[in-house]
Length: 379
Ligand SMILES: C[S@@+](CC[C@H](N)C(=O)[O-])C[C@H]1O[C@@H](n2cnc3c(N)ncnc32)[C@H](O)[C@@H]1O
Image (cartoon, rainbow, N blue to C red; front, top):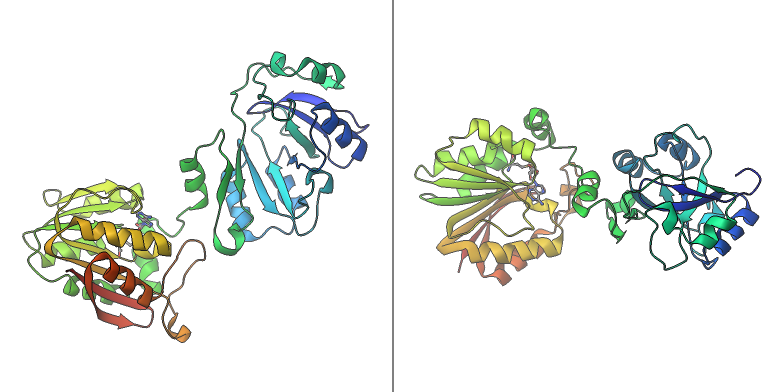
């Protein structure tokens, strides 16, 4: 590498080509070998995440936390590159850097990064075995390392360029690591641990008042209740105490939170399921759908879609009671601590309009700063 050589090597995915990331002649040779246009980017591969972090000092704390959760692994992350680092690997798009840290036992101690690209002709199939690497590439490379048969799926390319600012991410190329795994790493709900939830949320906001107001707004006499975002079961407990005949179905995407709920709620009245609000909801009809502090995790269009699906689940005369944090009309009322990219509150006016559009008659039952309880009755 240090004298401009190009190597064929087995990564944790498919066969790759590697060379010194700072040597223009080596990079030109690597590109020529695989017949790739020089304007196209490659990735910079480090063999140790801490070295990558040291080399990219512009990365912000959220992006670094995401890298810790994703790497090493079979992903290539696209990062903002305001420092214009590793220009030879970035092709035309110098403001974006592709980073790879593979799981390669034996190379973990390597202290310098390489520029790497897959060991095939541009647009050709990925090489799973050394024999799959085109013969012309193997012959002209300076070193060929036989890594045996490899898993065979290229890395998943994840665009994290907007992650620091607003938590947005996108899979730019599907690959070895599935979307659910990427999502779990990037939409990591560090807030929600069953042991600490009750105390931290009470420090953050007027939690018990909000819960009581939601229970009150939920009316009386419901027999079949759906709760969206049950968490540790605080809301469910109050709903069951108010609707004494009711059975409750609760959904939440966080299995650990739900198991805390399971241990406090009466099993004969409650059925809990791990599911996301964006996925198909449990089968109706329900007399009451209630939710506290969960819907603000959905973005605006997802909320609007959810409200339409909730309306379809409700029995005639049914009610949707929603307690949540909103974007207040007066920004001085924005007092609840929120995390960009994790919390996505919408203006109250937008939510009332989406509810009306879905076929609800709405009223605000309670409001305090940026916390609101909305009652939406099926029209
Ligand atoms: C702040 S807790 C509220 C729990 C309970 N309702 C309460 O008031 O204590 C939010 C819950 O919503 C869940 N959640 C967040 N986004 C979700 C989604 N998209 N689908 C399902 N559950 C979600 C979290 O796992 C968490 O348990």
